[in-house]
Image (tube, rainbow, N blue to C red; front, side):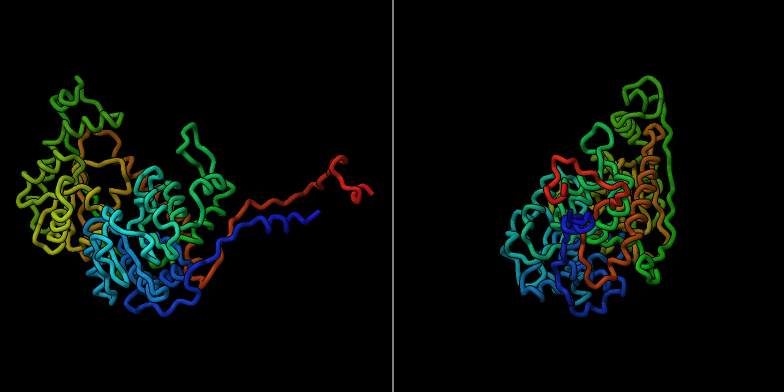
Length: 467
């Protein structure tokens, strides 16, 4: 009988690097830790960079795209959120990478090209040898049309790079979707190998305890996660950010708010529906509390809201405020984001879902949330528009809520703790893999060490074994 260890080795599935085995020198315009990551991603060919906000994902993806173009003599497309595309073109100019801003496939030129996600249907994926997803957390929902379109469109693209900050806490589906986009393993295969259902819901999965080390080693063979340069052995330097001051403002509820919410007595909201009703009932008081803070300040101020009525009321109550609303056309949204970036707008009012990703607003050190959703990712990303590398002032972040809204703030804090734990688990394995020049990815299985001799029934023994 074949030795069991040999049998397991033959069954192992390996995923070899498909990139540039000996990449050329990476630009000195990048920090040493950024150069390490770019070289690793070029060698992998298909990789994910999970780098915290402000660590230079834009520069890394531009350098990666430039080398892919030079290596393949083909075109590379970067997909980015609204307004980030124009910002990336300016970033490319500062680091010596020419980037063409495209609205349709007719605008594509040789080299590095960029467009917004919502214009993807105007492009033919077969025209590109490389694809970069900027803020690739859009892959998170496995039922979304965007996720399916991205995976299907670029399934045959030789070079693929996905860049985002730390994935949502305990959202293993997001990791599986990244792996599927990169062609490493399908989401279904990942779940069947390392996870079990947690409860009756088919969407709730729990990592098998004995498979934890194996799983994170597999993830970090195709994804590099860093929270700061010291994760890779470098000095953090300017990445040690100034303080972030979280300043809560809780608006008191009164009986009129209770009646507006459809109840007779004041009580903390227990359900999502109750929380929404409480938010609407306290809208006037929360807007006024925020306006008092913003109108008393003189510097740039970023105000985040969740409801259209909140945005409208804040724009009226705050002196000189300009709103970016969902109903604004694409060009107007982009123009107002640029105007805020360049100081022509002092107070910008908008939603995290509109402008919470990708923008660099280090010139602003004051922000306010007029209420919170339960999305930690949106909250985290919105905060990091200002509190990021390059920020020289301490950042004041006001959170204005109603006392009747329930445990929304506590829920965000819990998710933040989950995210930190997940990042710590991943980063344990990151440094070794990022620094490796080339490394094959093997599908790990739980080790089996037999200690009882197998007894084969006589009816399946061969004549040779019986003799």
